[in-house]
Length: 492
Ligand SMILES: [Zn+2]
Image (cartoon, rainbow, N blue to C red; front, side, top):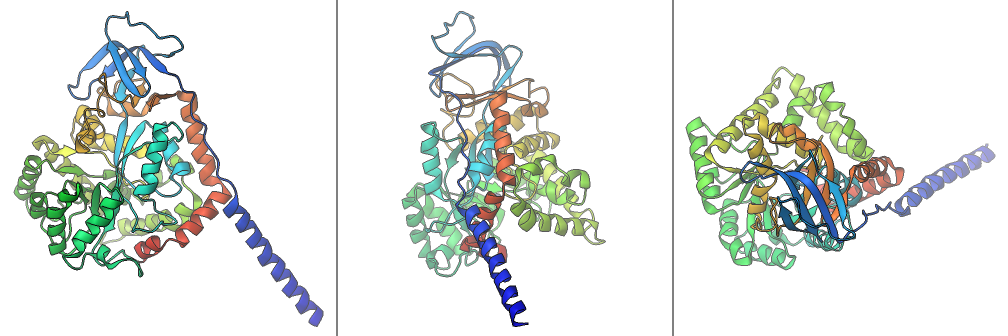
């Protein structure tokens, strides 16, 4: 008997030890690395059709010389000299558009492997990330310091990642979402906290404060009036305690998500709010894909998405599957049936009105949320904007020139002109004829490097392998588990 017990204990110890050994091997297993394309001093694109996203015209048969990461010359004569040792890309019967920007994403410590390759493979060359930290490095979320570091490595061609075009604070949500032990000014419970918060984030080189629903009205007002003095602006949700009219007048620069007008009582009110947004230069990022997910979670043809191969088991099991179940249940219940579809379709109607009034709309996806796939979902968002009744040109503008204007740098980004940064996508068909053509990517030029079709496939395969690898799933699990910010967000 005693012998048996000893044997059992020994076996149990061996089992626990082996599990611990496997997990620690996974935690310390080196992360894979992606090779960048070969660098050429010049890239010469021969005889391509440029889609001018400002005028809506297609400019036929242009030769384009790119030096470093900048468009040096655009020629119509056909006599432009090809410099020695330039990479020559045959553009005949192809179409060139500016790199697309996703203006609502959430990146994390694993984005290098799970997000960035997919963005570039889909021609997404700029993103506005809407997450941040609270002054301490987080095991899961990234902050301005990481993102600014990535940006400088992009410039040196040491990293494959879209440009992080603006730096966000952590989501500021009143006394919520701040774990114990962090400075209390993050909760904005007193008006005096506003200066401390702005000082803190201006030192962290943050460009905007991302606001959430539960900020006290007084702190919100003060935040709006003080932020410009620190060179910052406000973007995010509309706080519940403040009317949308007031938030627009106070100067919030962008509002996120498609539910923005769902609580407004009449069509007239919505029209007048949209007119106010137009005159105040307020942007709207409807992130329709999140509403589409909620409306479609019970449909197997929607949930059996082949792009799931790019998503880790951990994210699917801990986050997406429960979300699918909850939404499926609601969509199939007596009370909830059809409700999410109504929200989705109503948001689309609002977008059509907004566009006809002239409100600046930007494409955003909310990457990290359920069934949002980095890069791929941006093309879906453009198709959805088109299906609201926006023209293909307006949909393209939402991902190019509008974001460039939003960040105040349309002299360098957002359209194809000499002197601008040459982040561009070569397409096999014209997206002005059909917006779905944005997904027919032939090649991507980013920061002076050319990603041809083979390289783009390599990027996708890299993320497929990374997301299914045991060690990355283990690392991701521990990073989520160790993040106080995640714990408080999930408990909320
Ligand atoms: Zn978001």
